[in-house]
Image (cartoon, rainbow, N blue to C red; front, side, top):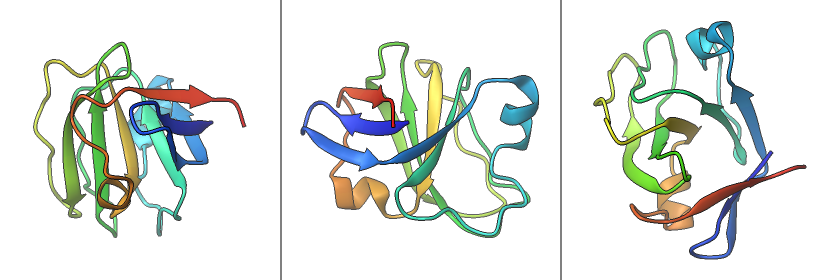
Length: 115
């Protein structure tokens, strides 16, 4: 899937993988070596993440049921817990630096497009 920011009319990532089953949400990005630029993981349902068993930091975008950004964690390092966001319905895990380079902000409207 392609992640698009409707508020800025900008593509954020061109290869978002879904994590919609229990086992895929449980595994997430654990034990992966890196997250390439333009890639990411959409975890649904999800209100909080952790980076245990990961070797690299990530950017985390928390979105509500309408895919509006409700919070962000930039550069969440390995071995940490993100805060629980009650307003979040799902989470996007992206390569570190994605939030800054795409100027992604709370309140932005996101969408997914088929590849």
